[in-house]
Length: 178
Image 1 (cartoon, rainbow, N blue to C red):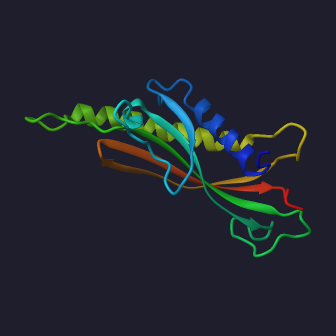
Image 2: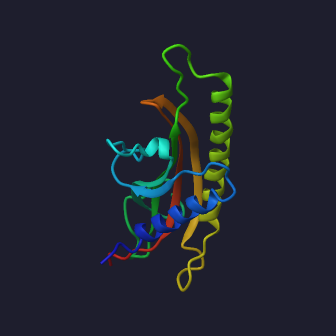
């Protein structure tokens, strides 16, 4: 058994994110969903997802809404035909430039990171547009009626990693609980 509202949204969002990096000269090494209060990379003894490059989508929150309230919330569902406001976090993580014991990272190192970061920014915008254009087969005319990009912000460097995160709010039609 699988969720019929959020899971399909996550599947499409992740596919849009991965597709949006087509043609990027240095795409992330892996794309996956995350769960919890932050979607960023993990590290272990044998793998650092940040330096491998990570693209992710994370379910951040959901609340009932109606056509007059979106992107705000509504306290009630209407006749089990309501909609949901779903907030997603999308992100890209990369290694931050590092120097050595003698010298900090060079201007060229930072320029390369900025170039990739702005291409990541472009890919995140493309991913949001992909989700907004998606029309699922054999369901509503447009399951994801509205997609709002709240912000796209860089984070770091922290722990040798930099991230670019996008927050979107999506109006999802459907009420499968009734």
